[in-house]
Length: 314
Image (cartoon, rainbow, N blue to C red; front, top):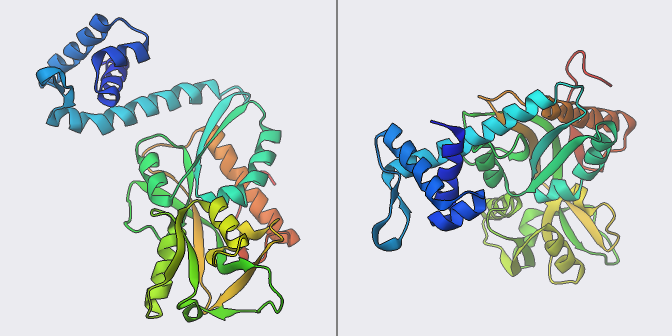
């Protein structure tokens, strides 16, 4: 079995068309078909059904697909890891993060890391925790900032809690700002709700249901920036992390009683040691949080849980 054969198999599996896959891989279609056939012969089972011109995966192909994705991703990681041995002059960090972290904390950390390691390529994938965990398992990410607890525990991941933050009710600025509110005061109020798959959507729904009511949506389905803009426009209120309100003077955040909080963790695969570039990013992130906590510059409502390991740079 060769990596090239797996790459051809993956291209056909994704395109569901041999000619289109060959064009994507920049190889002659007969050569691609020959390599797929050789792979099928070695594995002892057909990988594709070609009935009536339709290309579909056989059960053997379905079983191989996630393994091929992971093997190719790990091979690419290995190549880059070797290239990184020259003092991190080169390398890559593939980082996943939830939209609220991308809108808040992450930009400052990425800027600092890029200043220290300008030759390291940074790739950021924005998504919900479930999507990020899936991408980690497939080998498509090196690290991910996710929200705990996960809806289903994944023994293949290592998670490290790095911060805890308050969730607040975001609303348009109005006179007579309140110091706090109870979750049951959202009963009957129009809410601006995130799309399905957002951790914040599930946290809001769970809190409301535990208080004995179903929330009423004014509008739903937005990403973080859209939700905040809708709130600024007066469509309703939204439950958001406190950090995303920095730099938005048109919004105020009202703390919720009893305290509604969430925990952010840094995750990576247990079976693959993070690359040197990924380890350097982790150290940079923890240093940033520790220093910001010591200096009191973290946004209100954020508690750093991170600690440097002995010997890490300050």
